[in-house]
Length: 396
Ligand code: CTP
Image (cartoon, rainbow, N blue to C red; front, side, top):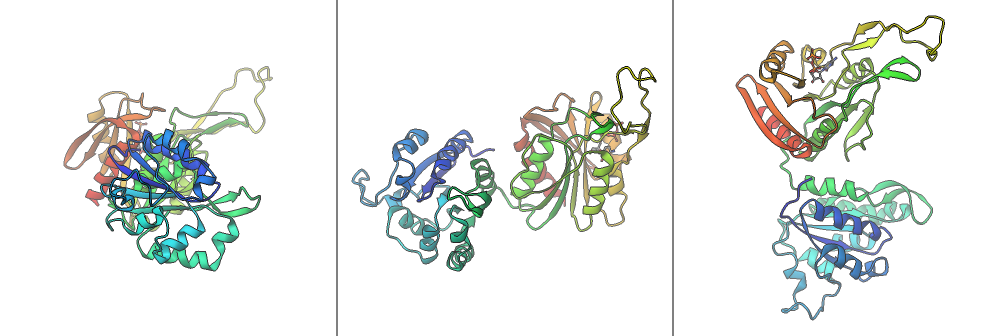
C-alpha cells in the first residue's frame, strides 16, 4: 500500500467504531500518509482527541471557533493542500448533514468548503435499522450522486448486540479503498478473472502434495485490478490470505477444481491472469482411507496422472479473454519464459526472477510480449501488481 506524501484529513463522527479510527490512523501513516484529524463533539465521547493526537502526531481540531487557528478559518485551512478527506466512522446524522450541505460544526463545514477536486470518502458506521431506514438510504443515494465515495458498510455483529449491515469496515479494508481512490481507473468496467495460490493434491484423506506459493502475488494483482476499476473474480487455491475488499473469491483445492471453476467463470471475462502455481500432476491412486505406516503393502507407491493446463484451456477458447501467464523458472528465465509464452499462445507472460519469491512480500518481474521484454525492478508485490495492471490496461 503506498500513500507516500499524501495528506489525508481524517474526520471522526459519533459512533463506537471510533476505536477503529485509531488503528486506521496508524495504518495510513505506515502507508506514508500524513493524517490531520478533525472530530465532531459526539466523536470525543467515544475516543479522546489526546489519543488521536498522539497517534497522528498532529494537532486535533474539534471546534469551529478554535482560537489556535490564527485566521479562525480552520474549515478552509485544513482542506487546502489535502489529497483526500476520509470520514470514518461516518454516522447516520453526518450522512444526513452531507446530503443537505449543512455546516453546523467544523467537520461538516470543512466538507462543504472543500475544493471539489479533493475526494471525500465516507465509511458509514451505525446500527442495522439506522442504516436501513429509508431516510438514511435516501441520504446515501444523494451523497453518492454528489460524488462522495461510500466505503461499506460491512455486515456482522454490532456493538448494540444486533446483527446486520452497518458495521464500519475494518481499518485494513478502508486502507485498501483509500489507496484505490488514488489509482487511475485504467480497467474501469472490465471483467477480470484471476487464479492465485497453490493447489493441493491428496495422497490420502490427511496427506497431500502442494507447493510453496503463498498467493500473495495473485491477491495483490486482484487488489490492484479492483482498484483500477475492474470487476474481479479470484479463483484461489488454499492460502492463509484474506480476500481483497470488493473481489469475489471462489475457493478451490485441486488443479482440476480450479480448472472447472475457471471454465465456469470465464464467459464474458475480458482479462484472464493465471498466477496460480498449479500442480502439473495429481495422485491417481490416492487412498480413500489414511495410509497406515505399518500397513501390509509396505512403503506406499504413488502414481500420477496429468492435470489439465488451465491457462492453455482458456487460451484455446474461440472468444478468449486477454490471457496473461506467469512463469517461475529456476534458470534461463529469458529463454524459457519467451518459449513458454509462444507455446501457450498468449500475448503476455510474466516471469518471476528466481523461484525464491514464494511467500515473500517483494518480487522482481520481467514482462514478455511479442515486442520483447520489460523489466519491473524489485518492489513490494502490491506496487508490482499496480505496474502489471497498468501494463495490461495499456495492451488491451
Ligand atoms: N498453469 C495453468 N495450469 C496448469 C499449469 C500451469 O494454468 N496446469 C499456468 C500457471 O498459472 C502459469 C503458467 O501456466 O500462469 C505457467 O506455469 P508453469 O508451471 O511455470 O509452466 P508449465 O506449463 O507447467 O511448465 P513447466 O512446469 O514445465 O515449467
